[in-house]
Image (cartoon, rainbow, N blue to C red; front, side):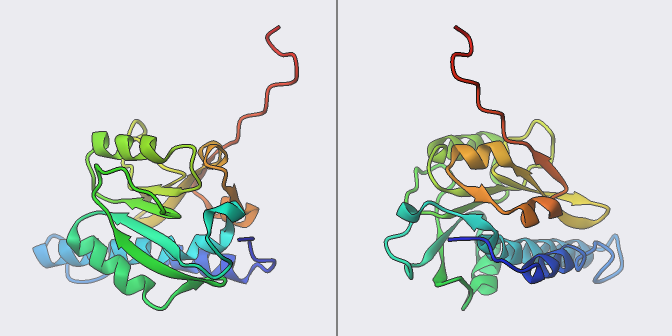
Length: 202
C-alpha cells in the first residue's frame, strides 16, 4: 500500500483535526457536556484511524492479496468499539476494505494492520505494544503523559483539539513507512535513528 500522490487527503485530515473542540455541545460543567465531548473526541479519533491508512505503506507480505481487508483491531470499551465500527463502516484504504475487529487488550493478537489501544491501563498498553513490536502493525494509543507507553501514533489533546504524535523510529521497527505528508501534520515526531555506519564500535 502506497501513500497517495496528491495533497488532498492531507488537507482533509487537517480539517478533521480542527473540527472538534471541547467547547462544542451542552454547557460546560454538566454531565451531559462531559459525555458528549468524550463521544465527539472518540468520533474524531475513530475517523483518523482509517484516514491514517493511505499515508502508511505496509510490506506487501502484510496482506494476503491486493484486495484483502485492512484489519482495524480495537482494544477498548464497548462504547468506543461501537464508535469505531460506525465510523469505519463502508470505508476502504485503496483496494482494501476496512474491517473492524475487537480484541482483548491483554491478549496476543495477530492479523491486525492497525491496533488501537484506547483507555487501557499503562501496563496493558505496554504489554500489547511489546507483543506486536517488530511486526507490520500500526499501533495507535491514547497516551496522556510523556512517560505513558505510546504506539507508532499517539493521540493527544492540544488546545481542546484532537492531535496526534508519530514515533517514526517505532514505525521503522514495525517495517512501516509513514508518508511525509502525515508526518508534517503531526503535533510531534520522534525521528528515525540513524543507522550505525559499517564497522562502528569495532
